[in-house]
Length: 253
Image 1 (cartoon, rainbow, N blue to C red):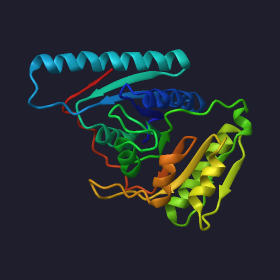
Image 2: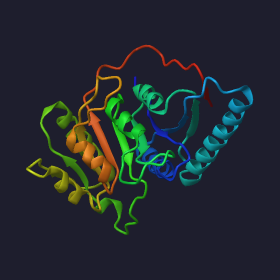
Image 3: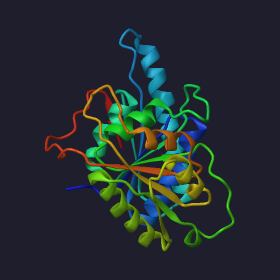
C-alpha cells in the first residue's frame, strides 16, 4: 500500500531549496506528509573524524530544511532521512512507497542552470512513482493558481495515457484548466510555449530498465532541461517490490 507522502531530495543548493518549497506546498494541497532526504555516498577510506564531521553537517542541513518546510506550511507533517547511499539510488528506492518524488534541476556540484542534474535525470528515469522536476528559480507570477493551466503532452502508449490521467487529476485538484498539447512536428517548442505561465507540465516518459542508463525519451529530456514550470514525469513502471527497504548507513527521524 502506498504511503501518502511526498519525498524531496535536498543537498543545500538553491535548486534543492526551491524544490523543497514546492514540495511542501504540494503536501498541503494533497494532504500528504513530507519526507526530506539528504543522501551522499561516504568515502570508505575516510577516517572517523571526517565521517563525524560530515554527519554533523548533514544533520544540520536536514534540520534547517525541515524547519524551513514547517515554517512555510505549519500544517504539513515533516520528517527527515539521512542516507549514506548514492542520492539517485536512495530516492529511487524510497519512491516504491511514495506518491511523488520531487527533485531540483541543479545540484550543489556546479551544473549550469540549463543542464539537468544527473540525480534529477536518473531519478526521473527509474523511480516507481511520478517524479516532479522543479526549475531552480520559479517565475514570480501574480496570476492566481486557478487561472494557470495544467499542461499535458499527448502521446501514444501506456505512459502517455498514464500522464493524461495524472494531469486530469492534477487539474481537478488545483481547480485549473487542463490544456492538452499534441505532438506535431515541433513538440518541444509547442510544450515550452504552453508551459509559460502554467502551474505544471505533465509528460509521459520511458521507464528505464537499464541500471545505469536513463532513457526518458528525446522530448521529455529536452523539456526537463528548459521548462519554466515544474515538470512531472509519469511512466509505466514494473510492479513494486514487496520486500522492505534496506538501509546500511541511514538515519531516520
